[in-house]
Amino acid sequence: MLRGDLSAWYGWWPQRLSVDELLAAWQSALARRGQPGSPATLQLYTHFAFCQASCAFCQYFHLVPHDRQQVDRYTDYLVALTERYAAALGVVDVTNAYFGGGTPSALAAAQLGRFLAAFARAFRVRNEFTCEGHPGNLDAEKLDLLAAAGVNRLSLGLQSLDPVVCRRIGRMNPPLERVRELVRRARALGMWVNADLVLGLPEQTPQSFLSDLDRLLADGRPDCLTVYRYQPVPHLNQAPDETLRYSRVLTPAVLLRALRQGYLPATSGGDDRPGKDFFRNSTRTWRQWFDRLRYEVVRMVRTDAELRSYAQFEDNDSHILGIGPGAMSHLYGHSWYREITAVATASTGAEPVYLGTRVTPADECRSALLQGFARSRWVDTRALGRRSGVDVEATFGPLFDAARQDRCLRRFARWVGCVPDASPSAQAAFFTSLLPALTGDAEARAQRAQETNGLRASEHVQRELVGIGDHLALPSGGPGASPSGAPQPPDDALVAWAQLIGLGVPGERFASAVVERFGGREVQFRLRPEPDPPLRVMVERDTGQPSFLRAGPYAISYVGRHGEPLPPAEEEFMLELSARTRAALGPAAEAVLPATERGRV
Image 1 (tube, rainbow, N blue to C red):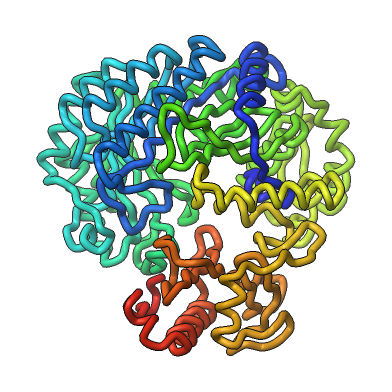
Image 2 (tube, rainbow, N blue to C red):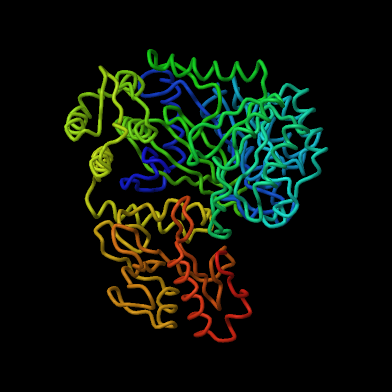
């Protein structure tokens, strides 16, 4: 996550937000839409939680349904929730919309049609309207329904065409001929079609990836082909081979070959960029680029510029309305929040549950500044002030002056930007100075943390989604600490496991590590010197949840760092914990999980 993302702030304090509060805030924001403090752009995201199968590489919230009735109940829930928004807000003009998941096309045609009918009564999408689809369960009937509802962009997740790679990641794709027919039909219905490939998957080679790329450009012929770099996930924690880097695979010869096939490569930005695109040379492609350029220019001089293409995590200067468990929302100047309603209990009578953090217009300015600086962009303070309603110079001017003296900030009139070759320590200090100060006393913060942790035990909320924000609730990290730094009482499962393997108290050595913190559901081990963070190991009662190790009554896992594989020393330590737990349990461990392979967690 970039430094500008709110989820990276140490001031992020998740708490439950009520439905009534959010609906009232949306009413107020929409009434002031396009004025300072309430952006004109309103993006809408709907999360379809189900997939027919779970791909091993996927890092997004999804479930495989037990039966068709479960999907029916979920569809009923989305319909009821959409109707509730319509009753409170009327028919809302949406700048752009996105149906994601999960897999929207996993719904049966009748279920999809029922939701689309309710959606049309609540929202009117005026620009880009995207739906994700799996080519294995998308068909002509569903494409017709989507086109009739106004969907004008289709995103097909392929990831790989290589059978060996697909088997390794647990994915089943249909033959390329079916993909080609879906692309043709979608384009005939007026849809812009994107297809995704992933670079760096297990078992993939440069040759197999380039074969996928050539075949898809030559035979699939989507309007855009997006290449993403594989990011290891805890249950498939195999780092991509160094030969599978953008710079090594997408060579000038490959880009020239794409040009000859009628595709314009947009591959600048180095190996750290999350995605690279190949655009089919067409009038619509050029029109999209012009629309984006027009938006960037207009928003510098007016507050009512609207971003026509969907960019949920790219542009914080917009409202985002999320529908469905797992969907993130951004109510500008008020809160960032996520719906955590449990899919198992979602039905027409279920009350949605939201977890998030409140923000102020000044916080929105911080986020815009941090995001711009992290991306080496110039930030127009006057335009930012018009959008947010905040006097940027009065609020942040002293920090700008101090950063200029430290030679890590430069400015030209009302424009400010980071110095590219600034001292890393000075730049880090400047970024830290822009972060929001912690407010409220320790008791109030502890109450918020207690409320958040309490949600984990509720059958009416999604346990995995609570966990996304749970470990960010406290500056020292994790549910095992309080805002004052004192540990919370350890969970019974953690205590029993610690006694089982002979784990000592904080400060004592265990194997190759030192116990640093013990409380809540986790224990933190220090394997690397500060300022590197400790390894956080979660120990819970085994209820079938994904984990590194399931042994006897315990589920043991580690909290990974976003976008980073587990370092070798910490991986060896996790294997040591696994071995000691198995040895202590004896035969009870062997019936639960076979031995963990090195490099796969």
